[in-house]
Image (cartoon, rainbow, N blue to C red):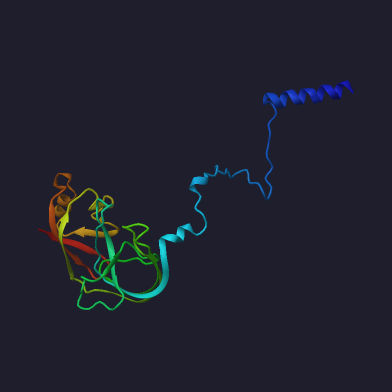
Length: 220
């Protein structure tokens, strides 16, 4: 009996001193590989609050221009490039009345790619955020085609800024926002990415290849 008491007492001392290794056995309700962070109640979004920024969701047919455009709004230093679209067929390349959105979920726009799309649109409540955009999600591509090779897009009064034109890697490919592009003359890309030229205002002539690519033909 004394031996048993001594063993129990010894085990208690070892456990309290950390000498006994404690293991957890995984059960369907407890996975030892998962460490759950503490919940910050201030970061928990109440049910339905995420939807309050949208006023309604509708199904629409839109017509997408092949010509991306610049997207300006006060909280962004570098203008992004956006997809231009309208709710009626685009006639004679009329870009003055088109809407502009940074992206369409599920749809990859390319230089010169014109499309007719069925989409769902979550209308953003302008009272929620002044610089927000509707959320467009692709349902179906009704029709898509590229504009002819050699079609030129002219962009005026472009300010050269840090990140305006980004080099992809060691190749000759650059990016305007998420649109890959090359330069007809390599020196043009060097000029447009040179920090000493930041702040300069230029016009760009971009010519498409009819397959989703484009090149900067000249700046002036």
